[in-house]
Image (cartoon, rainbow, N blue to C red; front, side, top):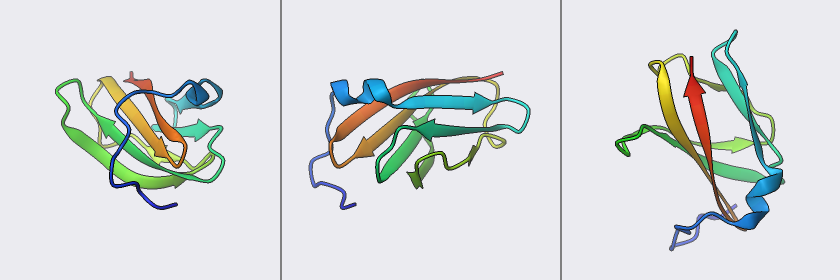
Length: 89
């Protein structure tokens, strides 16, 4: 995947097939429905980026470094951008 020079700023409708699945027991989550690879950006509600990495479908992402609270997980793929809410309990 190549990151486009202009990153989409509006969520795409293709994101409805993408799901964020949390596992609070292991302090991890994964994204289901990614066809290739995606850039994952997790930020707090003040837009501070806390996680920034390339991921594949169902790849576990640790949330052990995050405090309890609400976060925004933004996925950027070749076809657009999807935002999902992430709640760490």
